[in-house]
Image (cartoon, rainbow, N blue to C red):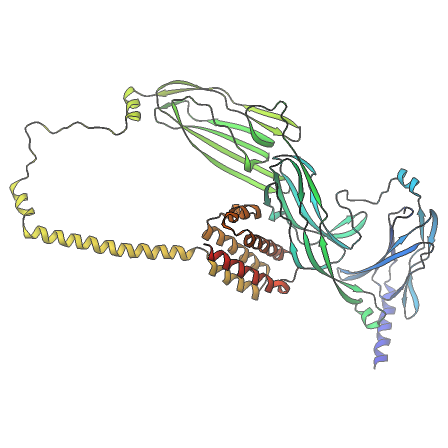
Length: 576
């Protein structure tokens, strides 16, 4: 029976050879250099069998790697061999062969290799890089932290992207620790994260890439800012060629390998804003902005509000922007401005608008001149200061001296308007009623009714307060969602758990969700002596964010997350 099955498999191999395609060969770099490693790769698509490598003489063989993938139902197999040349010159590598039942069913063309000496390599450009921002490591999978630019000015936003590059289509994360960014204001860009693999090329070789995390960083200090490395542990799966016909029929033997990942060290340089020619009305604006103003009515009455609206639009540190006040006369009272923001954190940085509505109240009638509103900012694109100046305003404030006196004299005193000769003596019938027993009965009844109403109103307020407190997210809600997530670690349930954890800090610790970045949360809890616990809390949220979108198996580390979250939550509750 076993012999019969093997015969059937060999017949299938023969049928496969009907659709055999030419084996593709690539060399990277195309012109190797003496004493520098290079790689030759053989890619087989739509074929199955045993392979036979050439001898690779006169090169030194450093190692071999294999990769199996299935795209649109078509199986492909890639073998890469790392070689080293000890001398320059031209050499030929014999064909790569694919065998079935001891017979050659396909083979590649011979490969001509032209090895350059070191002097020739310096003068001849290498055209093997299609990505200037990413350099391929020696591994088949690696992570990089990419900066939009390596040098910025203090206050100039830039994006930081954490990307995973892999030649394996199956990658599962066992653990991941995202870098903690310091030296500036940080904001995540969740909508810019694309944790599904997409195809790209690195140094001319095909790779799969996924964006694990994206940030906007606005440096607040000058000098060198180091980006901590990302640390991750992943398990990759691939198919390995086998001589067993059963394995060959199913595309090879499935192999799993654990890989430790770490991003290379990345350093950012933050330049100070130039002091030369810095305007006096420069506050902290850095970016490319457009300014517009909208003054209120120029004719008004005493104690009427005069409004002056300034709108800033463009790209830059809008979220941290500070605008100078309008220079108004001393006869005007100034109130806190009304600020409205429409700010978006995208892959291009910080964009949107900020509107500041200044409010002033004139206290004295007269004619007043309001100087122009002036403001300057630094444009990093032009490396120059840019300024805005509005028109001069002329205000007319109407009102009488009485209006002025009323606004400054405080409470109004009324004269006695009771005519002379009149008394306030009550009629006799009213005096007799207030001295009667009926009056006291009604008085006791009304006082008792008032006390009863107060008692029930107090109970109603307590019940209402309890309902409101129950509506707030507490530790029990977090534990309930944690239990649901542990039993069903789906993408939707992971997002629900994250939202519940953030709502817990908002409702129980009065920390708005907009201020729950890792740095803000750490600064909030550090004075309470909860620095270590809140670091664990932030790391757990980052891990859950990744598990919600990545192709992972959260069951494998659900127990670890469950234990850490319960322990951290218990500590936070004990310190409330």
